[in-house]
Image (cartoon, rainbow, N blue to C red; front, side, top):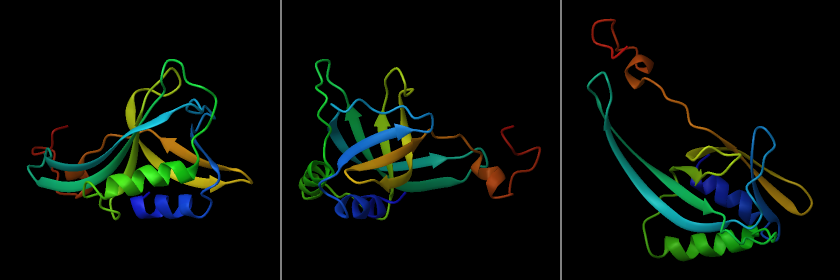
Length: 148
């Protein structure tokens, strides 16, 4: 999901509690903190020898050891986002990822699969990243040139 799409979903119901969940129904503890927003710029070279450039926005969540059960609202997330956006260049057209890990979520940078709203809650479905072969995706990968 693009950063601008995510932010628009939150702005539609700012009073809602903001819950992050995985496909198994596990949720990030409600006492999480939004500890960092990152404007990430990546430069890579794939196994086909092509240089790739892209940007992402990463929201890092953390649960303190003595976390209470009070869930952050979309309004609070937006206030932090808007403040940070005034300090660093967060590109709204980039994919938004969520960095998190605990006993139910392997530490990773998750994709935002979807955002749904109920009466007083906005649920963000996180899915784990998958590896891929960009060269194969471009169909430029022959059996001799491919890393496989």
